[in-house]
Length: 415
Image (cartoon, rainbow, N blue to C red; front, side, top):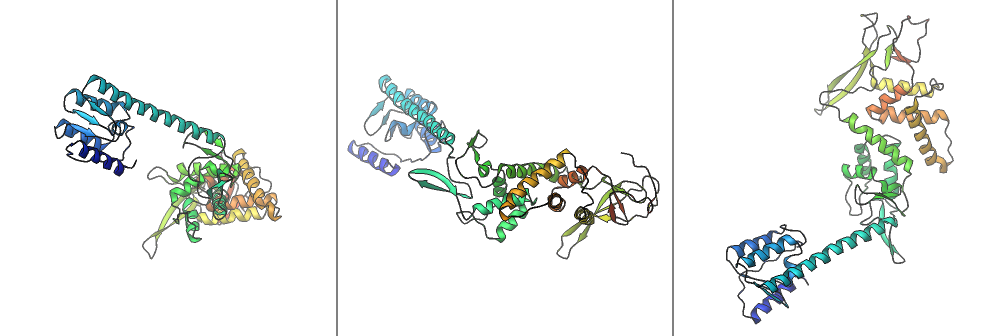
């Protein structure tokens, strides 16, 4: 019965038996846990202070379904503060037999409550093992019933957008903020009409449900779902690995500076390493633009080396130009870089096969390099250059794989 119905029945009982009602208290908190109901605790305190000495309630389990609260009621009866508890069909006074019966009824309610919880958990576990995730469908899916069976089906409107989110993160190395700007620009919303927050975007990109598995409860065991996946496991792993790499690199210790190409180049004039420095230029709107320059350390032979600095953007553009020209075609990347290029190749090939497009080895390498150097994290950019396993030189703001002996002085490079 509703709380209002219970109150009406107990008021009628009080009128019939000529009982004086001092106050009416209502509370919707569960009686399952001990000492968690503020109104019930208030009731106990008022009994201790002799405001009233009896309680009217619809049934014993409305008062307690846990040992702690039941003990508090019995203690008040033992102390003579609580003379009687009246329910719709029973009465419990301060006598051994009636207190014992009260404790049995409340304990029975606790047993039923505990068993109900076990049965619910067992049912949820069975549903998970069958491949169906309990609860509302994640964004990109909808809940529906088919032939009496509840299932999660693709949301035809939102599923393609969710897939593109993963592709933008994993294949184009776009950040969460970049993806959010794109989603907002196309007017993407949830079924409730709300835009996705940045935290929601990260939860989507780390949710295994989208490749066909789910954890229930959160952090629990992983189950294979019967729902249709939106993405492949390979794409999910690429996104996850990239996001794992972002955390330590994008949140360096206070005061530290990260330069992806530092110590990866040699000066083409004197053979010294290049170092990096940053400068900030104030904008009209009051903000600042950050510019990174790489210059010769002048630490090998010539302290007066005339080489000028080169910007990070110039380095990226020139490396991509060298790749396009085939200068790196004979390069064998190290194991980690090779693995990442192959992952990118498999995913890209899978995505474009339906369009009849075929890419060469150089195309795959160029696409991977472009994504990494232009939109990748600092760690990914640094790892790409190191993974090439070749020395690179800068002279007159131009990058070379090797020094032409007819146009540059000779020097020794110590690794």
